[in-house]
Image 1 (tube, one colour):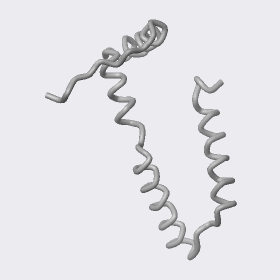
Image 2: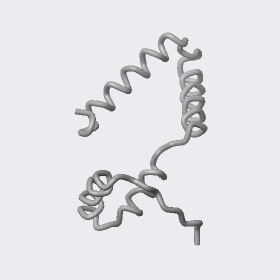
Image 3: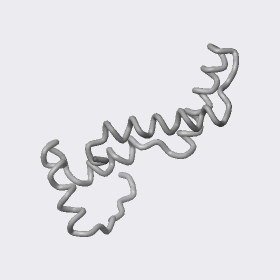
Image 4: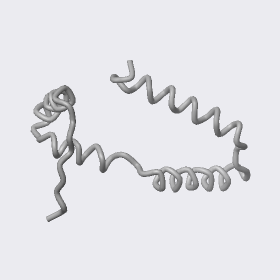
Length: 88
């Protein structure tokens, strides 16, 4: 069995997590575990970015510069915010 630990959250946070957990037929604990497993770590993000650069390099023969990368990142963040109902 994995090490167990308690996470202290406010009553409002607990109440807010109860609805989606109940709606999915799960517990708050399982919901938090799924959230943690689904979020990439910094190392995972760096690895995915390097894979993307390698793919671009193999297809385009070059890698976009820092300015192009920053613009693309901003666009992706805006697109993600539009898809996230909690961001509205």
